[in-house]
Amino acid sequence: MTAQPARPERSGGGTASVLDVVPFKPSLVKAVFRDVTPMHVSRSAVWAAASVTRTVLTEIIDGARRAAAEEARKKLNPGDLLSAIERNVELEVGDKWYDHSPTFRGLTGVLYDADGVIVPSRKRGRSRKPSAVVGAHRFEAGVKKLLRSQGATAAPAMVRDLDGIASVFLTDLARDAAMVVREGGVRRFGTVTPVTPGEPGPPPFLEEYPRVPSAHRVGGRTIGRDDVLAATTIQLFGGDLRQRALTEAREATRNTSAG
Image (tube, rainbow, N blue to C red; front, side, top):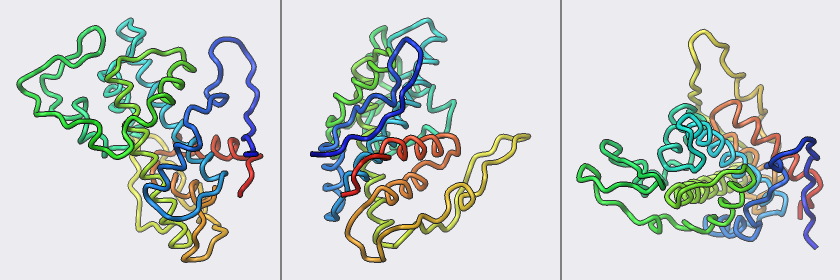
């Protein structure tokens, strides 16, 4: 029987903690790994990848909720997604999805009605179907579950974008985790981190998250939890979001079997 990850108890009333919600089924997460690599994937790696994706989506939804609240709206629409990303560059993830969503292309002249549906505009180019991205729509149920856990509702177009971002981000995460195994650790040739003038910059990569001690030699064929954590440091360049994702992934996999 597959071990379930431990989840921290949270006190207080209101909406359940997102850490108590596992929106993405392990079988779906594992299917993403199978799409990009023939390597074996441990259960702890699957749970870690699901946790990191949940953390990223939670932060995006939280930013979109704040944008909607400023306009006294409860229902989130793609405009709120754009606002969340514009306000926090750390949330600019899964960017391959942007080429397939009308939300992120031809923004001049794009309008949304009260239900978050894009109003046709001659200034927009022809949209590609979301199905153009492999795996799109597989995480729709998980996205809706995560929205409910935060007491949020979203227009269909917003759900579609969150689903697409989750799919692309997780695919990139799986691909980088496989690369970490093949190369025996994280190899970086330099990073670019945004810094606000007058504020201290984030700690260097090697101080914040040392070179990942992989249990695999170069040419290994099993992706473990630490490989996913290493891939997370590649995918998430922002200090706050990256550290939160790493912390929550470790917690989510604390009592999970590595097999």
